[in-house]
Image (cartoon, rainbow, N blue to C red; front, side):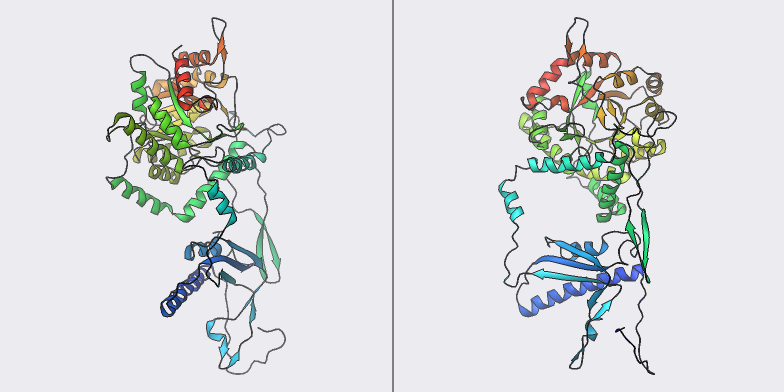
Length: 529
């Protein structure tokens, strides 16, 4: 109501507004549907194509947001992307009120214009476009196009962005000043992300929540998990799980789409007869503790060179949080490997190396995403999952015909795998990774100790068909040999003697002074010493 006193007479009509999330959501849909309808009507009646939207500004009152829309953040701004997907810029601010007419029907009363009102609970959008229909120009985009690297290749700017993101994830935990909490078995105490932290502020009749960063990760792994949960939430907002499962079902029924391949079989074929220690190359862009592994990371090029060099299987780290990867890396690697296999054999039916996806997997949703991307197998981190979650995720992977490799970094984690049913996992990866800060045990003793532990003996006794791999600085760690020499081959021999079948190798192949093929051959020669 206008400020001041109002005379209420008999017959006066009032309109009351109640803040209710579902109705507010429908109101937004109606608003944008009306805008699109009006735009189309003007285009058909006027015969001219409207200028593309260059920006959209959103004004939303303080009482709206997650509290009004049932915890769903960004709903009002997402409507802009939904109805104007090509708009390059969306900006806005929160306000105590929005000024505007009540609705379209009350702007005019006869010849008299109704004054605008201040609305205490509303959202207003302002759409900008060029009157002269000038094309949208972005200096940043133009500069980026001029210096754009080849397809699949990362630029220096991309590497810096990824490094900054990794630094933010690790910055909240400093192992030098605080020790991560551990349980009685020595395992890290891990909490899931807090999503409803904040403090309520009331002003008059309006109440809203101010975000308070009340929770702080107590280890690098915990911070990694929280960032990964946020990443998955964003995926779910775009494509709900039910829709993703349907996409997977249709994908599997399509004869033109690639089917899951046996990942472990080709590696066992390499070792059969000559007892070879198998090197499984991994395409990895960055390490949290050391930064970029290569000057220019091109997953398609690396996969092609590895295929031509004779790799029988390839691992691809597709995690963007700590390793600078992307889900698209799986597809790029698979397609590049297939192309290289065809070129090498001149046979369109050539079998390319299968692909295993390395990521921090916490939800079945991620497994469906990886299957659609073309992964043949997946790596799960036992240190980040409860036993019941391990069981559930391996079953989902089995249903998608993907093999499961489980990474372990402690005896307790190995013990958690004993209860898994035979056939639910294909391999165990014994890691030199220290989960507290995501560095490596540079001595290599962690993996050797686990391979020789009683927990591993118990596991092997129950799961005789499960293959044992190692990961972490293989090809870099050097050990003293019986002949007095110190080299990487001695450490590989110790791993093999302790029961390891092979190793995932990323940093050991990332020699900027050598080609991928030469680095691969050097490491393979070391396994035969």
